[in-house]
Image (cartoon, rainbow, N blue to C red; front, side, top):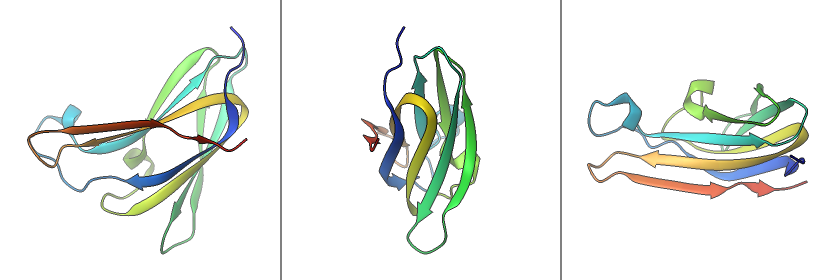
Length: 120
């Protein structure tokens, strides 16, 4: 399989919903970046978190093996719930990045997913 993607990706709209309905950890409100590396080389992805009221946080280094998918919940990296943020990812090889938000504050859950912006 050939390399697919870009080396710089941007997620401009970040917001982990504060709170969840129910007790199932699999349905807790969260946001994730999903990274696909179709190429023959492992990817070293650096993730930076930008806030409206403080300096950026990072780099968080995410290893993505060759020909694999990798999912990272952003709260596990210390991104707080209820705070606006944006994410920039830099990879040493081309990858594809998708952003997903699960909002389970209500009993009728909402799942939003979009491809991040490929800046380079």
